[in-house]
Image (tube, rainbow, N blue to C red):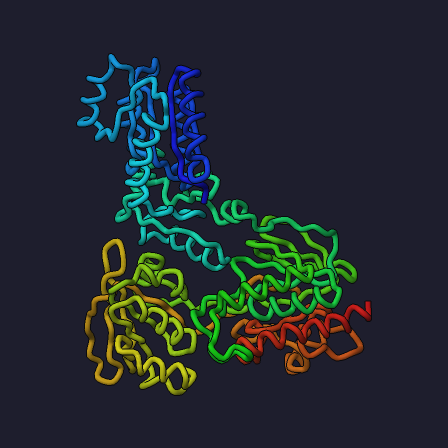
Length: 553
Protein backbone atom coordinates (compact mmCIF):
# COMPACT_ATOMS: atom_id res chain seq x y z
CA UNK A 1 0.00 0.00 0.00
CA UNK A 2 1.19 3.58 -0.74
CA UNK A 3 2.06 6.10 1.94
CA UNK A 4 -0.79 8.04 3.60
CA UNK A 5 -1.55 11.31 1.84
CA UNK A 6 -1.37 14.96 2.82
CA UNK A 7 -3.74 16.65 0.37
CA UNK A 8 -3.54 20.43 -0.22
CA UNK A 9 -5.66 22.67 -2.44
CA UNK A 10 -5.38 26.39 -3.24
CA UNK A 11 -6.38 28.27 -6.38
CA UNK A 12 -3.35 30.56 -5.96
CA UNK A 13 -0.62 28.58 -7.71
CA UNK A 14 2.21 30.39 -5.92
CA UNK A 15 0.71 29.70 -2.49
CA UNK A 16 0.05 26.09 -3.49
CA UNK A 17 3.64 25.66 -4.64
CA UNK A 18 4.92 27.09 -1.37
CA UNK A 19 2.77 24.92 0.92
CA UNK A 20 3.57 21.81 -1.13
CA UNK A 21 7.31 22.57 -0.94
CA UNK A 22 7.25 22.99 2.82
CA UNK A 23 5.14 19.88 3.37
CA UNK A 24 7.40 17.72 1.17
CA UNK A 25 10.52 19.04 2.91
CA UNK A 26 9.25 17.84 6.29
CA UNK A 27 7.01 14.82 5.56
CA UNK A 28 8.01 13.20 2.25
CA UNK A 29 9.57 10.14 3.95
CA UNK A 30 6.34 9.08 5.68
CA UNK A 31 3.61 10.76 3.62
CA UNK A 32 2.75 11.45 0.02
CA UNK A 33 2.00 15.13 -0.64
CA UNK A 34 -0.61 15.74 -3.34
CA UNK A 35 -1.80 19.17 -4.41
CA UNK A 36 -4.10 20.80 -6.93
CA UNK A 37 -5.52 24.22 -7.71
CA UNK A 38 -8.88 22.90 -9.01
CA UNK A 39 -11.77 21.85 -6.78
CA UNK A 40 -13.42 19.68 -9.44
CA UNK A 41 -10.12 17.94 -10.15
CA UNK A 42 -9.59 17.45 -6.42
CA UNK A 43 -12.99 15.82 -5.87
CA UNK A 44 -12.52 13.43 -8.81
CA UNK A 45 -9.03 12.55 -7.57
CA UNK A 46 -10.36 11.88 -4.09
CA UNK A 47 -13.01 9.49 -5.47
CA UNK A 48 -10.31 7.60 -7.38
CA UNK A 49 -8.14 7.47 -4.25
CA UNK A 50 -11.02 6.10 -2.19
CA UNK A 51 -11.72 3.34 -4.73
CA UNK A 52 -8.03 2.42 -4.79
CA UNK A 53 -8.05 2.05 -1.01
CA UNK A 54 -5.67 4.95 -0.38
CA UNK A 55 -5.76 6.93 2.87
CA UNK A 56 -5.76 10.72 3.33
CA UNK A 57 -4.31 11.84 6.65
CA UNK A 58 -4.85 15.61 6.36
CA UNK A 59 -6.70 18.00 4.08
CA UNK A 60 -5.27 21.52 3.86
CA UNK A 61 -7.65 23.76 1.95
CA UNK A 62 -7.67 27.46 1.13
CA UNK A 63 -10.87 29.20 2.22
CA UNK A 64 -11.39 31.63 -0.67
CA UNK A 65 -11.51 29.72 -3.96
CA UNK A 66 -13.61 30.71 -7.00
CA UNK A 67 -15.12 27.26 -7.62
CA UNK A 68 -16.04 26.54 -4.01
CA UNK A 69 -15.25 27.89 -0.56
CA UNK A 70 -12.79 25.86 1.47
CA UNK A 71 -15.32 24.95 4.17
CA UNK A 72 -17.68 23.50 1.55
CA UNK A 73 -14.83 21.58 -0.08
CA UNK A 74 -13.89 20.07 3.29
CA UNK A 75 -17.51 19.00 3.82
CA UNK A 76 -17.47 17.10 0.51
CA UNK A 77 -13.98 15.68 1.13
CA UNK A 78 -15.02 14.33 4.51
CA UNK A 79 -17.70 12.15 2.89
CA UNK A 80 -14.91 10.32 1.08
CA UNK A 81 -12.35 10.33 3.90
CA UNK A 82 -14.23 10.91 7.15
CA UNK A 83 -11.25 10.20 9.42
CA UNK A 84 -8.84 12.68 7.81
CA UNK A 85 -7.82 15.78 9.72
CA UNK A 86 -9.12 19.14 8.41
CA UNK A 87 -7.03 22.32 8.13
CA UNK A 88 -8.27 25.60 6.65
CA UNK A 89 -5.76 27.96 5.07
CA UNK A 90 -6.94 31.53 5.72
CA UNK A 91 -6.00 35.17 5.43
CA UNK A 92 -6.37 37.35 8.52
CA UNK A 93 -9.73 38.64 7.28
CA UNK A 94 -11.12 35.07 7.13
CA UNK A 95 -10.59 34.13 10.75
CA UNK A 96 -14.29 34.50 11.56
CA UNK A 97 -15.14 31.96 8.83
CA UNK A 98 -12.47 29.62 10.15
CA UNK A 99 -13.79 29.82 13.69
CA UNK A 100 -17.34 29.14 12.45
CA UNK A 101 -16.00 26.14 10.48
CA UNK A 102 -14.71 24.59 13.70
CA UNK A 103 -18.34 23.87 14.55
CA UNK A 104 -19.73 23.37 11.05
CA UNK A 105 -17.22 20.79 9.75
CA UNK A 106 -15.38 19.90 12.96
CA UNK A 107 -12.33 21.82 11.69
CA UNK A 108 -9.18 20.63 13.43
CA UNK A 109 -7.03 23.70 12.79
CA UNK A 110 -6.89 26.91 10.81
CA UNK A 111 -3.58 28.10 9.41
CA UNK A 112 -2.84 31.78 8.79
CA UNK A 113 -1.03 33.01 5.70
CA UNK A 114 1.91 33.43 5.61
CA UNK A 115 3.22 30.59 7.80
CA UNK A 116 6.87 31.63 7.85
CA UNK A 117 8.91 30.28 9.41
CA UNK A 118 7.31 26.81 8.90
CA UNK A 119 9.39 25.34 11.74
CA UNK A 120 7.44 27.58 14.11
CA UNK A 121 4.06 28.21 12.46
CA UNK A 122 3.40 25.10 10.31
CA UNK A 123 5.19 21.94 11.38
CA UNK A 124 4.23 21.88 15.11
CA UNK A 125 0.51 22.05 14.29
CA UNK A 126 0.72 19.51 11.46
CA UNK A 127 2.86 17.16 13.63
CA UNK A 128 0.24 17.18 16.35
CA UNK A 129 -2.57 16.44 13.92
CA UNK A 130 -0.62 13.63 12.22
CA UNK A 131 0.22 12.03 15.56
CA UNK A 132 -3.45 12.11 16.51
CA UNK A 133 -4.48 10.64 13.13
CA UNK A 134 -1.85 7.87 13.33
CA UNK A 135 -3.14 6.72 16.72
CA UNK A 136 -6.44 5.65 15.07
CA UNK A 137 -5.13 4.75 11.62
CA UNK A 138 -5.47 1.16 10.40
CA UNK A 139 -4.11 0.43 6.90
CA UNK A 140 -6.82 -0.33 4.36
CA UNK A 141 -6.89 -3.66 2.52
CA UNK A 142 -4.85 -3.35 -0.67
CA UNK A 143 -6.28 -5.52 -3.40
CA UNK A 144 -9.61 -6.45 -4.95
CA UNK A 145 -12.72 -5.35 -3.08
CA UNK A 146 -16.06 -7.06 -3.61
CA UNK A 147 -19.12 -5.11 -2.47
CA UNK A 148 -22.54 -6.73 -2.49
CA UNK A 149 -25.29 -8.50 -0.59
CA UNK A 150 -24.46 -11.62 1.43
CA UNK A 151 -27.44 -13.62 0.16
CA UNK A 152 -26.83 -12.93 -3.52
CA UNK A 153 -26.03 -15.86 -5.85
CA UNK A 154 -23.97 -13.54 -8.06
CA UNK A 155 -21.91 -12.34 -5.08
CA UNK A 156 -21.32 -15.95 -4.05
CA UNK A 157 -20.28 -16.90 -7.60
CA UNK A 158 -17.66 -14.13 -7.66
CA UNK A 159 -16.38 -14.95 -4.16
CA UNK A 160 -16.07 -18.61 -5.09
CA UNK A 161 -14.24 -17.76 -8.33
CA UNK A 162 -11.73 -15.44 -6.65
CA UNK A 163 -11.12 -17.85 -3.78
CA UNK A 164 -10.74 -20.78 -6.16
CA UNK A 165 -8.15 -18.88 -8.19
CA UNK A 166 -6.23 -17.96 -5.03
CA UNK A 167 -6.88 -14.22 -5.50
CA UNK A 168 -6.97 -12.28 -2.18
CA UNK A 169 -10.05 -10.10 -1.91
CA UNK A 170 -11.98 -8.12 0.67
CA UNK A 171 -15.69 -8.90 0.95
CA UNK A 172 -17.89 -6.04 2.14
CA UNK A 173 -21.54 -6.68 2.90
CA UNK A 174 -23.57 -3.65 1.80
CA UNK A 175 -26.09 -4.15 4.59
CA UNK A 176 -23.61 -4.14 7.48
CA UNK A 177 -20.32 -2.57 6.34
CA UNK A 178 -20.00 1.22 6.69
CA UNK A 179 -17.20 1.44 4.11
CA UNK A 180 -19.37 -0.44 1.61
CA UNK A 181 -22.19 2.04 2.18
CA UNK A 182 -19.77 4.92 1.71
CA UNK A 183 -18.48 3.46 -1.58
CA UNK A 184 -22.06 3.03 -2.79
CA UNK A 185 -22.94 6.63 -1.90
CA UNK A 186 -19.86 8.33 -3.32
CA UNK A 187 -19.99 6.33 -6.58
CA UNK A 188 -23.77 6.87 -6.96
CA UNK A 189 -24.43 3.12 -7.05
CA UNK A 190 -27.92 1.62 -7.01
CA UNK A 191 -29.12 -1.81 -5.87
CA UNK A 192 -29.14 -3.10 -9.45
CA UNK A 193 -25.40 -2.31 -9.77
CA UNK A 194 -24.35 -4.88 -7.17
CA UNK A 195 -22.23 -6.86 -6.74
CA UNK A 196 -19.46 -4.39 -7.54
CA UNK A 197 -15.80 -5.33 -7.98
CA UNK A 198 -13.14 -2.67 -7.38
CA UNK A 199 -9.65 -3.53 -8.58
CA UNK A 200 -6.44 -2.34 -6.94
CA UNK A 201 -6.04 0.43 -9.53
CA UNK A 202 -9.48 1.80 -8.62
CA UNK A 203 -11.31 0.43 -11.68
CA UNK A 204 -14.91 -0.33 -10.75
CA UNK A 205 -17.11 -2.96 -12.45
CA UNK A 206 -20.85 -3.24 -11.85
CA UNK A 207 -22.35 -6.77 -11.86
CA UNK A 208 -19.32 -8.05 -13.76
CA UNK A 209 -19.12 -11.37 -15.58
CA UNK A 210 -16.55 -13.95 -14.52
CA UNK A 211 -14.66 -13.36 -17.77
CA UNK A 212 -14.46 -9.62 -17.05
CA UNK A 213 -13.04 -10.34 -13.60
CA UNK A 214 -10.61 -12.90 -15.03
CA UNK A 215 -9.34 -10.30 -17.48
CA UNK A 216 -8.96 -7.78 -14.65
CA UNK A 217 -6.85 -10.12 -12.52
CA UNK A 218 -4.65 -11.10 -15.45
CA UNK A 219 -5.78 -14.66 -16.10
CA UNK A 220 -4.75 -15.86 -19.54
CA UNK A 221 -7.71 -16.07 -21.92
CA UNK A 222 -5.93 -16.50 -25.27
CA UNK A 223 -3.79 -19.27 -26.72
CA UNK A 224 -0.25 -18.64 -27.93
CA UNK A 225 0.47 -21.55 -30.30
CA UNK A 226 -1.17 -22.79 -33.47
CA UNK A 227 -0.78 -26.42 -32.42
CA UNK A 228 0.06 -28.23 -29.18
CA UNK A 229 1.42 -31.68 -28.46
CA UNK A 230 -1.18 -32.18 -25.73
CA UNK A 231 -4.16 -30.24 -24.44
CA UNK A 232 -5.42 -31.12 -20.96
CA UNK A 233 -9.05 -30.26 -20.21
CA UNK A 234 -9.64 -29.71 -16.50
CA UNK A 235 -7.24 -28.45 -13.82
CA UNK A 236 -8.09 -30.76 -10.94
CA UNK A 237 -5.36 -32.94 -9.38
CA UNK A 238 -5.23 -35.24 -12.44
CA UNK A 239 -5.04 -32.35 -14.91
CA UNK A 240 -2.43 -30.47 -12.89
CA UNK A 241 -0.32 -33.62 -12.61
CA UNK A 242 -0.61 -34.29 -16.35
CA UNK A 243 0.41 -30.70 -17.13
CA UNK A 244 3.48 -30.90 -14.87
CA UNK A 245 4.69 -34.14 -16.45
CA UNK A 246 3.77 -33.11 -19.98
CA UNK A 247 5.61 -29.78 -19.86
CA UNK A 248 8.59 -31.13 -17.89
CA UNK A 249 9.07 -33.87 -20.50
CA UNK A 250 9.23 -31.43 -23.38
CA UNK A 251 5.69 -31.54 -24.72
CA UNK A 252 4.05 -28.24 -25.70
CA UNK A 253 1.26 -28.34 -23.13
CA UNK A 254 -1.96 -26.35 -22.72
CA UNK A 255 -4.17 -26.68 -19.63
CA UNK A 256 -7.77 -25.46 -19.93
CA UNK A 257 -9.95 -24.87 -16.86
CA UNK A 258 -13.55 -23.67 -16.83
CA UNK A 259 -13.46 -22.26 -13.30
CA UNK A 260 -10.47 -22.56 -10.95
CA UNK A 261 -7.51 -24.91 -10.45
CA UNK A 262 -7.83 -27.73 -7.95
CA UNK A 263 -11.26 -29.09 -8.84
CA UNK A 264 -13.28 -30.46 -5.92
CA UNK A 265 -10.03 -31.16 -4.06
CA UNK A 266 -9.23 -27.45 -4.31
CA UNK A 267 -12.23 -26.66 -2.09
CA UNK A 268 -11.06 -28.97 0.72
CA UNK A 269 -10.08 -27.09 3.85
CA UNK A 270 -7.60 -29.79 4.91
CA UNK A 271 -6.28 -32.92 3.14
CA UNK A 272 -4.51 -34.95 5.81
CA UNK A 273 -3.78 -38.25 4.06
CA UNK A 274 -1.74 -36.91 1.12
CA UNK A 275 1.70 -38.49 0.91
CA UNK A 276 4.57 -36.27 2.07
CA UNK A 277 2.49 -33.80 4.11
CA UNK A 278 2.23 -35.27 7.63
CA UNK A 279 0.40 -32.24 9.00
CA UNK A 280 -1.86 -32.03 5.95
CA UNK A 281 -2.41 -29.20 3.52
CA UNK A 282 -5.41 -27.32 2.16
CA UNK A 283 -6.81 -27.96 -1.29
CA UNK A 284 -5.99 -24.36 -2.19
CA UNK A 285 -2.38 -24.84 -1.16
CA UNK A 286 -2.10 -28.03 -3.21
CA UNK A 287 -3.58 -26.27 -6.25
CA UNK A 288 -1.29 -23.25 -5.79
CA UNK A 289 1.82 -25.40 -5.58
CA UNK A 290 0.79 -27.49 -8.58
CA UNK A 291 -0.12 -24.60 -10.89
CA UNK A 292 3.14 -22.84 -9.98
CA UNK A 293 5.09 -25.99 -10.77
CA UNK A 294 3.27 -26.54 -14.06
CA UNK A 295 3.77 -22.99 -15.32
CA UNK A 296 7.43 -23.04 -14.27
CA UNK A 297 7.94 -25.99 -16.62
CA UNK A 298 6.20 -24.12 -19.44
CA UNK A 299 2.54 -25.17 -19.29
CA UNK A 300 0.17 -22.55 -20.71
CA UNK A 301 -2.88 -22.07 -18.51
CA UNK A 302 -6.14 -20.97 -20.11
CA UNK A 303 -8.88 -19.94 -17.67
CA UNK A 304 -11.77 -19.47 -17.27
CA UNK A 305 -12.72 -21.23 -20.49
CA UNK A 306 -15.08 -24.13 -21.18
CA UNK A 307 -14.72 -26.70 -23.92
CA UNK A 308 -17.91 -27.51 -25.81
CA UNK A 309 -16.61 -29.93 -28.42
CA UNK A 310 -13.65 -31.94 -29.70
CA UNK A 311 -13.45 -32.41 -33.47
CA UNK A 312 -11.15 -34.71 -35.44
CA UNK A 313 -9.16 -33.46 -38.42
CA UNK A 314 -6.83 -36.03 -39.96
CA UNK A 315 -4.37 -36.97 -37.16
CA UNK A 316 -5.15 -33.79 -35.21
CA UNK A 317 -7.81 -32.91 -32.66
CA UNK A 318 -9.52 -29.53 -32.63
CA UNK A 319 -10.69 -28.22 -29.26
CA UNK A 320 -13.68 -25.86 -29.61
CA UNK A 321 -14.23 -23.43 -26.73
CA UNK A 322 -17.56 -21.88 -25.73
CA UNK A 323 -16.61 -18.68 -27.57
CA UNK A 324 -15.93 -20.78 -30.72
CA UNK A 325 -12.15 -20.38 -30.45
CA UNK A 326 -10.48 -23.44 -31.99
CA UNK A 327 -7.25 -24.99 -30.67
CA UNK A 328 -5.34 -27.67 -32.57
CA UNK A 329 -3.54 -30.46 -30.76
CA UNK A 330 -2.07 -33.89 -31.39
CA UNK A 331 -3.39 -35.47 -28.17
CA UNK A 332 -6.00 -34.70 -25.50
CA UNK A 333 -6.27 -35.67 -21.84
CA UNK A 334 -9.76 -35.22 -20.32
CA UNK A 335 -9.56 -34.55 -16.58
CA UNK A 336 -12.77 -32.62 -16.02
CA UNK A 337 -13.60 -34.49 -12.81
CA UNK A 338 -17.02 -34.45 -11.19
CA UNK A 339 -19.55 -31.94 -9.91
CA UNK A 340 -21.58 -32.31 -6.73
CA UNK A 341 -24.94 -33.87 -7.50
CA UNK A 342 -27.82 -31.42 -7.34
CA UNK A 343 -30.34 -31.94 -4.57
CA UNK A 344 -33.87 -31.86 -5.96
CA UNK A 345 -35.57 -31.32 -2.61
CA UNK A 346 -38.18 -28.55 -2.39
CA UNK A 347 -36.69 -25.10 -1.78
CA UNK A 348 -33.08 -26.05 -2.48
CA UNK A 349 -32.89 -24.44 -5.92
CA UNK A 350 -34.70 -21.33 -4.65
CA UNK A 351 -32.11 -20.66 -1.94
CA UNK A 352 -28.96 -21.79 -3.74
CA UNK A 353 -26.49 -18.93 -3.29
CA UNK A 354 -28.78 -17.49 -0.59
CA UNK A 355 -27.67 -19.67 2.30
CA UNK A 356 -27.42 -22.97 0.40
CA UNK A 357 -24.12 -23.81 -1.28
CA UNK A 358 -22.61 -26.74 -3.15
CA UNK A 359 -19.16 -27.15 -1.61
CA UNK A 360 -17.82 -23.63 -0.96
CA UNK A 361 -17.28 -24.09 2.78
CA UNK A 362 -14.04 -22.11 2.58
CA UNK A 363 -15.69 -19.25 0.73
CA UNK A 364 -18.68 -18.74 3.03
CA UNK A 365 -17.31 -19.92 6.39
CA UNK A 366 -16.63 -16.42 7.73
CA UNK A 367 -20.27 -15.48 7.12
CA UNK A 368 -21.33 -18.38 9.37
CA UNK A 369 -19.85 -16.91 12.53
CA UNK A 370 -21.93 -17.98 15.56
CA UNK A 371 -24.67 -19.45 13.37
CA UNK A 372 -26.46 -22.79 12.99
CA UNK A 373 -24.93 -24.58 10.00
CA UNK A 374 -25.83 -27.87 8.29
CA UNK A 375 -23.61 -30.09 6.13
CA UNK A 376 -25.28 -32.69 3.91
CA UNK A 377 -23.09 -35.66 3.02
CA UNK A 378 -21.03 -38.41 4.62
CA UNK A 379 -17.83 -38.42 2.57
CA UNK A 380 -14.43 -36.95 3.34
CA UNK A 381 -15.29 -33.66 1.64
CA UNK A 382 -18.27 -33.23 3.96
CA UNK A 383 -16.17 -34.12 7.00
CA UNK A 384 -13.40 -31.69 6.08
CA UNK A 385 -15.99 -28.95 5.50
CA UNK A 386 -17.64 -29.62 8.86
CA UNK A 387 -14.31 -29.41 10.67
CA UNK A 388 -13.50 -26.11 8.99
CA UNK A 389 -16.95 -24.64 9.60
CA UNK A 390 -16.77 -25.64 13.28
CA UNK A 391 -14.10 -22.94 13.75
CA UNK A 392 -16.69 -20.27 12.88
CA UNK A 393 -20.19 -21.61 13.47
CA UNK A 394 -22.00 -21.90 16.77
CA UNK A 395 -23.12 -25.42 15.81
CA UNK A 396 -22.49 -27.70 12.82
CA UNK A 397 -24.90 -30.54 12.03
CA UNK A 398 -23.91 -33.32 9.60
CA UNK A 399 -26.98 -34.84 7.95
CA UNK A 400 -26.64 -38.43 6.67
CA UNK A 401 -29.06 -41.21 5.69
CA UNK A 402 -27.02 -43.97 7.34
CA UNK A 403 -26.66 -44.59 11.07
CA UNK A 404 -23.09 -43.34 11.20
CA UNK A 405 -20.09 -42.30 9.09
CA UNK A 406 -18.01 -45.48 9.34
CA UNK A 407 -18.79 -46.77 5.85
CA UNK A 408 -18.16 -43.50 3.98
CA UNK A 409 -15.56 -41.41 5.82
CA UNK A 410 -11.91 -41.90 6.78
CA UNK A 411 -11.43 -42.86 10.42
CA UNK A 412 -9.11 -39.93 11.17
CA UNK A 413 -11.89 -37.51 10.19
CA UNK A 414 -14.50 -39.40 12.21
CA UNK A 415 -12.23 -39.14 15.26
CA UNK A 416 -11.73 -35.41 14.73
CA UNK A 417 -15.46 -34.79 14.39
CA UNK A 418 -16.31 -36.83 17.49
CA UNK A 419 -13.84 -34.75 19.51
CA UNK A 420 -15.24 -31.42 18.30
CA UNK A 421 -17.84 -30.13 20.77
CA UNK A 422 -19.91 -28.06 18.34
CA UNK A 423 -20.31 -30.79 15.70
CA UNK A 424 -23.27 -33.18 15.83
CA UNK A 425 -24.07 -36.12 13.54
CA UNK A 426 -27.73 -36.44 12.54
CA UNK A 427 -27.88 -40.08 11.44
CA UNK A 428 -30.82 -41.68 9.63
CA UNK A 429 -31.99 -38.19 8.69
CA UNK A 430 -33.10 -36.63 5.44
CA UNK A 431 -33.93 -33.08 4.37
CA UNK A 432 -37.51 -32.72 3.17
CA UNK A 433 -37.63 -28.98 2.46
CA UNK A 434 -35.67 -25.74 2.67
CA UNK A 435 -37.67 -22.77 3.93
CA UNK A 436 -37.21 -19.03 4.20
CA UNK A 437 -38.12 -15.65 2.75
CA UNK A 438 -35.24 -14.01 0.88
CA UNK A 439 -32.71 -16.47 2.29
CA UNK A 440 -32.51 -19.87 3.95
CA UNK A 441 -34.01 -19.77 7.44
CA UNK A 442 -35.25 -23.27 8.26
CA UNK A 443 -34.93 -26.90 7.17
CA UNK A 444 -37.63 -29.54 7.48
CA UNK A 445 -36.01 -32.83 8.50
CA UNK A 446 -37.38 -36.37 8.77
CA UNK A 447 -36.13 -39.19 10.99
CA UNK A 448 -35.99 -42.21 8.66
CA UNK A 449 -36.53 -44.64 11.55
CA UNK A 450 -39.55 -43.06 13.22
CA UNK A 451 -40.85 -40.98 10.26
CA UNK A 452 -41.01 -38.04 12.67
CA UNK A 453 -40.75 -34.65 10.97
CA UNK A 454 -39.36 -31.47 12.53
CA UNK A 455 -38.46 -27.95 11.42
CA UNK A 456 -35.11 -26.61 12.62
CA UNK A 457 -33.41 -23.22 12.41
CA UNK A 458 -30.76 -23.22 9.67
CA UNK A 459 -28.58 -20.26 8.70
CA UNK A 460 -26.65 -22.17 6.03
CA UNK A 461 -26.58 -25.54 4.28
CA UNK A 462 -23.50 -26.91 2.52
CA UNK A 463 -24.14 -29.82 0.16
CA UNK A 464 -21.56 -32.55 -0.51
CA UNK A 465 -23.48 -35.42 -2.06
CA UNK A 466 -22.76 -37.81 -4.88
CA UNK A 467 -20.61 -37.25 -7.92
CA UNK A 468 -21.83 -36.38 -11.40
CA UNK A 469 -19.12 -36.48 -14.07
CA UNK A 470 -18.67 -33.36 -16.16
CA UNK A 471 -18.94 -35.14 -19.52
CA UNK A 472 -22.15 -33.85 -21.13
CA UNK A 473 -20.01 -32.04 -23.72
CA UNK A 474 -18.01 -35.15 -24.69
CA UNK A 475 -18.96 -36.49 -28.14
CA UNK A 476 -17.02 -38.30 -30.90
CA UNK A 477 -18.76 -41.57 -29.95
CA UNK A 478 -16.52 -41.72 -26.89
CA UNK A 479 -17.90 -44.55 -24.79
CA UNK A 480 -19.33 -43.62 -21.40
CA UNK A 481 -21.06 -45.79 -18.83
CA UNK A 482 -24.68 -45.37 -17.73
CA UNK A 483 -23.69 -42.69 -15.21
CA UNK A 484 -21.69 -40.64 -17.72
CA UNK A 485 -18.17 -41.66 -16.65
CA UNK A 486 -15.71 -42.16 -19.51
CA UNK A 487 -14.64 -45.75 -20.20
CA UNK A 488 -10.99 -46.43 -21.01
CA UNK A 489 -8.63 -49.30 -21.92
CA UNK A 490 -9.75 -52.89 -22.06
CA UNK A 491 -12.95 -52.16 -20.13
CA UNK A 492 -14.42 -50.84 -23.38
CA UNK A 493 -14.37 -54.29 -25.02
CA UNK A 494 -17.58 -55.26 -23.19
CA UNK A 495 -19.53 -52.58 -25.06
CA UNK A 496 -21.26 -53.74 -28.25
CA UNK A 497 -20.28 -50.64 -30.23
CA UNK A 498 -16.58 -50.73 -29.30
CA UNK A 499 -15.42 -52.51 -32.47
CA UNK A 500 -17.49 -50.11 -34.55
CA UNK A 501 -15.64 -47.05 -33.24
CA UNK A 502 -12.15 -48.47 -32.56
CA UNK A 503 -10.36 -49.01 -35.87
CA UNK A 504 -6.70 -49.42 -34.87
CA UNK A 505 -4.90 -52.77 -34.95
CA UNK A 506 -3.62 -52.33 -31.39
CA UNK A 507 -5.63 -52.42 -28.17
CA UNK A 508 -6.37 -49.10 -26.45
CA UNK A 509 -3.83 -47.96 -23.89
CA UNK A 510 -4.85 -48.23 -20.25
CA UNK A 511 -6.21 -44.63 -19.99
CA UNK A 512 -7.16 -44.19 -23.66
CA UNK A 513 -10.76 -43.63 -24.65
CA UNK A 514 -12.52 -45.14 -27.65
CA UNK A 515 -11.13 -42.25 -29.74
CA UNK A 516 -7.37 -42.81 -30.30
CA UNK A 517 -5.16 -40.12 -28.84
CA UNK A 518 -7.84 -38.93 -26.41
CA UNK A 519 -7.21 -40.03 -22.84
CA UNK A 520 -9.14 -39.74 -19.57
CA UNK A 521 -7.73 -39.56 -16.05
CA UNK A 522 -8.95 -38.91 -12.54
CA UNK A 523 -12.51 -38.90 -11.23
CA UNK A 524 -14.05 -38.45 -14.70
CA UNK A 525 -12.86 -41.94 -15.66
CA UNK A 526 -15.05 -44.98 -15.00
CA UNK A 527 -13.53 -47.10 -12.25
CA UNK A 528 -11.42 -44.29 -10.76
CA UNK A 529 -10.68 -44.48 -7.02
CA UNK A 530 -11.90 -40.95 -6.16
CA UNK A 531 -8.78 -40.09 -4.18
CA UNK A 532 -6.44 -37.16 -4.75
CA UNK A 533 -3.39 -39.41 -4.78
CA UNK A 534 -4.83 -41.77 -7.41
CA UNK A 535 -5.89 -38.81 -9.58
CA UNK A 536 -2.36 -37.41 -9.44
CA UNK A 537 -1.00 -40.84 -10.37
CA UNK A 538 -3.36 -41.23 -13.31
CA UNK A 539 -2.55 -37.74 -14.54
CA UNK A 540 1.16 -38.50 -14.66
CA UNK A 541 0.50 -41.93 -16.20
CA UNK A 542 -1.59 -40.41 -18.98
CA UNK A 543 1.45 -38.50 -20.27
CA UNK A 544 3.35 -41.78 -20.63
CA UNK A 545 0.59 -43.01 -22.92
CA UNK A 546 0.54 -39.69 -24.78
CA UNK A 547 4.23 -40.20 -25.59
CA UNK A 548 3.48 -43.69 -26.91
CA UNK A 549 0.61 -42.39 -29.02
CA UNK A 550 2.66 -39.52 -30.45
CA UNK A 551 5.39 -41.97 -31.50
CA UNK A 552 2.81 -43.67 -33.74
CA UNK A 553 1.53 -40.62 -35.63
